[in-house]
Length: 563
Image (cartoon, rainbow, N blue to C red; front, side):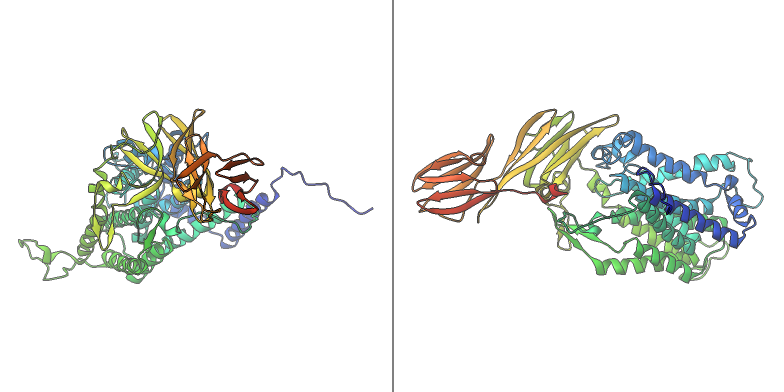
């Protein structure tokens, strides 16, 4: 009898186990062949308490804790509360403090946690849990206590940088990525090659995570709605974070007198990191759903960044201009050491990036009445409008190089006067694609949902007619109605128009000065207006007149609902 293996239980994750097994076997094989004989452990224990980057783990736990317990991710992993935890303005301290640790969703969170786990240990290693100054010893003071340095000082410095990056960010940012870039900038100063290797290691970790989460992916061609990928990057926050990290790294390097890496190695490390992290993707938005990418400018900036950082890290203490001061001389700009000129350039660059955030973040949400009949959820108002001035961006009208901050917007609007929030939570195009979407609002310890849906008709040759409804706690109200649309076909001198009314959709037939109207009939039924019979089929509204049959409208369809 041939041997028949027993059936595999459907609950056994064979593919995930295979991934973990092969990864573990590969690591053990390399370790066995390399035979480090404790050398790796000695290197780690030289800088880390018990060889472990405790500060990195504490910081990672803080980021995860905000997502789970403040944003409500522990109960709603894929749909945390986001709106109240953005850095809306200086008049909303909660957003400024929490936004740097909060995230828009699980992928956003995991991506930044992976970045933290690969870059923060390098930065923490460069800083160290043990004092490095000659003559200093551990436990001689609270500043040299390795437990304080690992569990208090390093996390405290990260909190300061996190809040600082939120304060100087333009617009309602959210996420830990600015601090991740600060970790990378700090590490690039001391270990440029290791930082690039860590960047690739992060991609490997991301691939392993994806393989464990979805071992097999089946995809087919289908319509999607998305913004350009580069329009999703917080380029200003990333650049400020990187410069802050580099400046802190240079300060520590010069203060300790640590050996400096070669210029070419630093230049290459910074350039490879900046390009791979898309720091060249300088863009702006022109309102609605239109964006512009300044690719050439971005390339110039990343090469300039790599050059300035490399020269600052490796330059000597000799003055760039003039001669070194003799005793009793008075310092001036001409006698600044060469590396300090690099610091000046980076400080000015960071100030130029952060400066525009001050006037923008000093303003709050518009107090003008919202259009429609907004849904009230505690201090939030939720409504829908089209082609209205953005209540946050238009507060500061700045124009430069043909671009302006004064833009109009269309979509689902969420406002909170108490929090200084005014945002287009769902754009017009995204709602037209999905048909129905939830809008989540809330605060610390509470959350609520307003469901917004669109229904309408596509009129032949006349465009779309639609209503936007908002539902909260079982109460549904119409918050927007589009203008009527007239079909292009004329039926024996009669015009057929579809309009959205508070109670539903109506059809009107106009003949001369006479107009008759009635609700669009249900499927399978018909109504006669001005001699024209309007029959509702499953897929269309058809007009009949003396043997003539013509389609005048069809129900809207929403591609996003097919997924």
